[in-house]
Length: 335
Image (tube, rainbow, N blue to C red; front, side, top):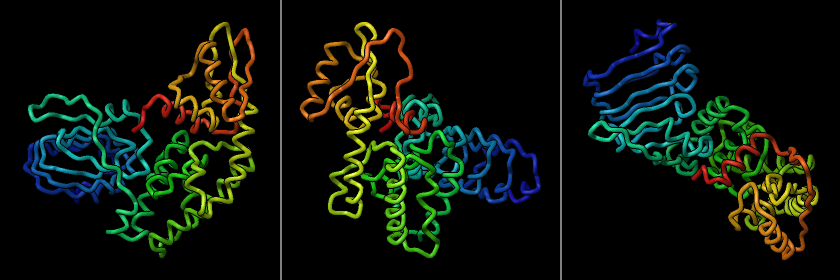
């Protein structure tokens, strides 16, 4: 592979049927034009794809009929469709957990049975927890790949990204930050231990959430119960107040006998009650009465308005990334 380093316009590599036992992608680290890698029917047991993390054109990889038992696909997760044996255990960085829906995962990872027939199933992915990673590597070696992945994630997936990052760091209660996930890492440095870095990220997240609340931002997926007796408890009064206010600013539109629930899903109380009652994006008048009863038990009121034409009625400050994530979430498109 070393000779390929000089191939500046390389688009495809086909090394199928060569009985290869190992392969080093390092010479391709600066290859910006590479689109296809075909490694079918070799004796490969492991591969390191990190040298290809910045290859923007990579779209297809065929690893089928090898001896790979498990493989970390984090470096190519965002770019390439991968064909592999159905027995392979896929691993990926936790930051990527909510990037794709179930349907998108099936489209990206083509599993093949031993008889060569396609295996039409959602791939099982082991999401790599950062605490477990820290047992084998320093924070600097964890941080650098994270930064590379975040740079490759489209702005419309930032909310998904922060959810994966903070949950992977065991900070589920704070995983409602609606902004650039790179900001969560900017107070850490390479000399920190994992514990120190996690502490810095925790404090930075509190700071960013505080700014988010000052701007009347969203409060979804923030767990007040878990925040109690922690440094995050200082945010609880702001969250409680904002959650009441976001509901007060929400009006459900009624056209005929159909009630449109979309804006309610973007509020904490709405998300909680709608999910518990199995509601979707609309309901009928009877369903509305059941919802009003549920909210009344919490001393909360639902505002409604009869309309001739339904219009975009979300008045909150949540990003389009957050809104898209919520819609996928309520439809069960993620694990």
